Length: 127
Image 1 (tube, rainbow, N blue to C red):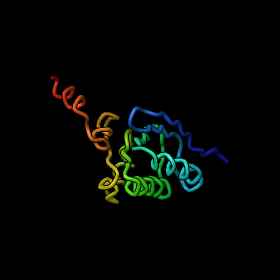
Image 2: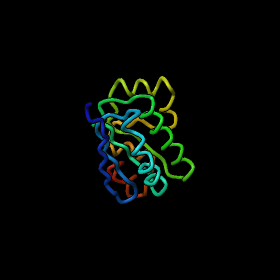
Image 3: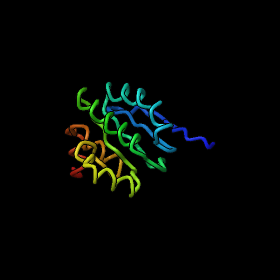
Image 4: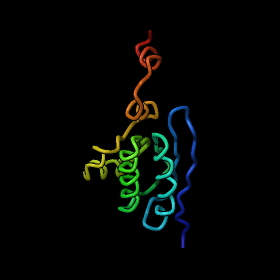
């Protein structure tokens, strides 16, 4: 039997938490990380980098959606970075992208999750 564990690396940012996931998010591997994601999103906005996730099944998608709902309840939020095309298509078909932004970069994810500071806006405008 092949190993289907999901690896998770947590990186604390200044105003958010980044989580790098890799492996397969399926019925066997995804449930053990649910509690970790809930705890993280309960404290701060969460940027999930899923570029290392090679496969999502319904349970993996469900855990991402449930983590996003938890973030909404806690006043934080979740944004995804690095979603592979097929999984992104599934997110859109299921209309999950209406709750969880699919972003092309961490910078875009932070703009979706955090109110920009005056310094952020000035830097963006090149002022």
